[in-house]
Image (cartoon, rainbow, N blue to C red):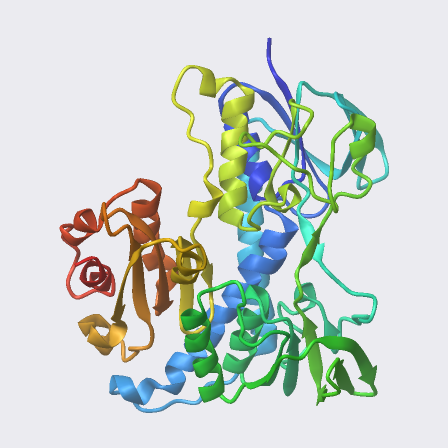
Length: 454
């Protein structure tokens, strides 16, 4: 009997689950109200990285004299930048739609909710209603920017993350509220595009959940670029006064700028999903899941930001794939490796880039765990010299007894690409010897990984 699989939410998790399940023989329906590919992915992640790439091109041209070129002074064309972002997002959405349709997945443009644990109601965007009976259900509705009661974004000068790709104009002076991953990416992005930037840091350094040495390297770069860091300050109000924005902090400090961006996290899209009607447990809007991404109702799965796990597109995509395999019984006749969230690689697309995976030095120290830490600066790399960019380092964490690679951090150019090598080692319990004896291309930045392993 064919399994009827209904997916509510067409982000990375939903698209992956729908595609894999259809390939494995399920009858799949996916319900998405906004954009196939996911709002958080296509309205946040992709356009932000595209804008960062544009800023990176400006930065590179700004230091072109170091590459033996005549200095040039390009300017931003906001309308062309807007068209570039729309083109990239449109192309990606089209490819997701084509992929699903090629697998005979039915796409419903609308909003889904549970009537009970086996029935899904879809309200189409044109107002019509349709009901689906399901054997298996995936909830992957994503998240949206968190907006506190003391802030009222207007989309013009007080912005959320989704108002900024691109903003109505490049800010003359931007205040960024929030010094986590999203906040520091905004600082880098708009500093590269020519804005004066102030970053409000509620703690004593940016990226409070990252290795302090990594955070220090980024702070140093920000200060060198003229970014104003307000440390130990927590925002309590953001108000627009004519054509200015005033941000007040709990310690009495006040920042006045032309624009402000709120980047203080996100909240799950779980209201009106009918969770109680289906008997699905939820906490603070998130749905707790087990190692198979099952909720307390075994045939109802949750993935992506809604699951409360790492809010990464890569994690959501892997969850979707694993859900499809599990619900169709693929785990019963072959080894089924569960997702180890502690081994997920992540990156921050600042300049220099930051990436890490596995155990960090600070984490090992906090837990009294004995580790071997080796660090090699990119200033020792021939390729970094060729690129005229020797900022940053590679830090490798390994078990001193077995040599198994436990984790690592990279700060520098292409860190997001380079971390994949360490992630492969961490996931498969490879040793520093395995890494050191691998023949890499010369000259490349990846050779620094070998030096750290040695």
